[in-house]
Image 1: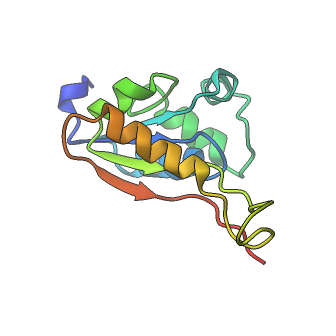
Image 2: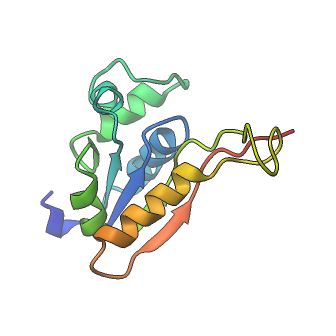
Length: 138
């Protein structure tokens, strides 16, 4: 299916424990939606493009194999994928703060902010942005 044939295009920033599995399920259930997971880590993207996934969830490899290269893609081309997307998920690491107000309790949202700034820098049209990251629990 050519890029123009997809009804909707999703970009997921972050190829970890939240982004990868979530996007695989979306791609498996919505074949007319193009899902691209992007990350700055070539190693992480390389693992998602192989059969040696960087994380284990029962059945995840089979789901990824079913959709990879059809309507699910993994890439380091962040700017291009942001520009193409209609919806952008921010699914990056939000570790517990180690210093300052909320240290030991609050989430460090620096990575979320970096993603938001990248979207603002690159996007030339309106985007729907969804924040879906891990949150520390104490």
